Image (cartoon, rainbow, N blue to C red; front, side):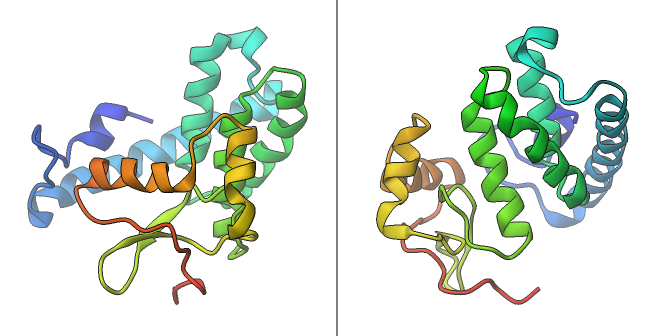
Amino acid sequence: MNRALRDAPIRADGSAIHPDSALPLVRAVQESDADSIAFLNRVIDEHGWPTIDIIGRDGAEAAWLLVQHADPAPELQRHALDLMQPLAARGQASVTNVAYLTDRVRVAQRRPQLYGTQFRPDADGVQRPYPIEDATHVDTLRTAVGWPSIATYARQLESAVGGRARTEPLEVFPAR
């Protein structure tokens, strides 16, 4: 995944460039992502999930970023999650990365997320979490992996995207 390429459609002030200008960049990101997915598949096939002991924390974080953004390959995301879960229990993968990927996989399967990490705009353009399995106790799960409350996360999201965010989850998954 080429981070500079992924961030290219965003101006220095945080605003997005005009969609017509962004189209070539979007295509370049898609091509880069396809290359990253193929690379990560090869690594996993040959060596298993890259652990912290083998490639260090930065390398493990980079591998997770690749799979977290591999939405065109949900089977890779599911497989990586299956490999990462027991490794996290042994300190060889990040528990927070496993939590993020858990929500990403569940949302792709149109199942309620556990940690409330995946948001999308509602009909009014307000960022809201996809359905959450147990919204009443989501902060307990978030605390267990070292995260702030979902309310704090929503405020951080507002700051990052420059719009409004709410903690109330969407009641249903939007139509595809």
